[in-house]
Length: 287
Image 1 (cartoon, rainbow, N blue to C red):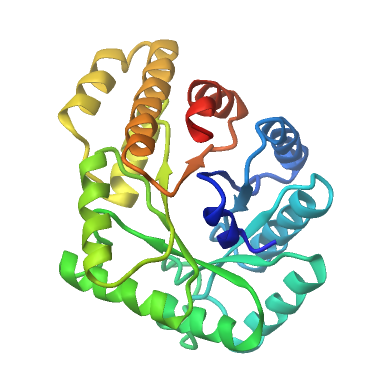
Image 2 (cartoon, rainbow, N blue to C red; image 1 turned 30 degrees about the vertical axis):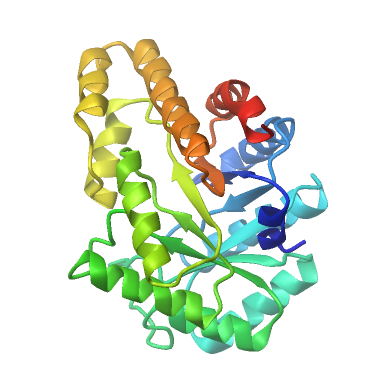
């Protein structure tokens, strides 16, 4: 099923998981998916880590299992920076064979260990290519606070419009901690004529290292309320976990009240956190 169709019927609720980094941890991801299945997600997306072709195989194997073994719609992440057009054509054929209809089309981050290919300079190039060579539902990433490489917020929206014009059917945001950033972004998108569904990406922060990694990689704004909570409980792991979950729940409740199209939860492969959040917001999703 093309998951863009779900937005016409309901408020979409979905998860993201990532392939295990160690071979001996491979069974853990399937245990995680089994536990997430009970929460009835509309889909589960599988990230593509920066490990070359081996990560490619892991991503598509897990996405195929989600769809064909667990009966949940899956989304395969596809960053193009390290792929040629010939390689992407092979990936599209493999996805078709596995029955996967949904792709999150990304440029991808530059990895110093790999020389980037030049076939797809931007995500919009990949989106156009997928549109030309297959009947897939194409998801694009968007950035409520602007991509850190964009010269300005206006340039970032222009780039997003190019993705939509190239054929993106829906959007998922990068994580954010200030809902006002999302509401401002949604307004800018509407002004630019972007009228496809936008799912809000929410990441529950449950430890100090996670906060530091997020700030370094994503360069998102950390509101005073968030910082106060994190500073208060940084030396109490259990309290910090619970506070991070509560903050994410508060975000989601506000987003649903403001008419968000859907919630995409970055689970970090932690089904306990997903369960806690689902229990808190389940009735709101169908209200």
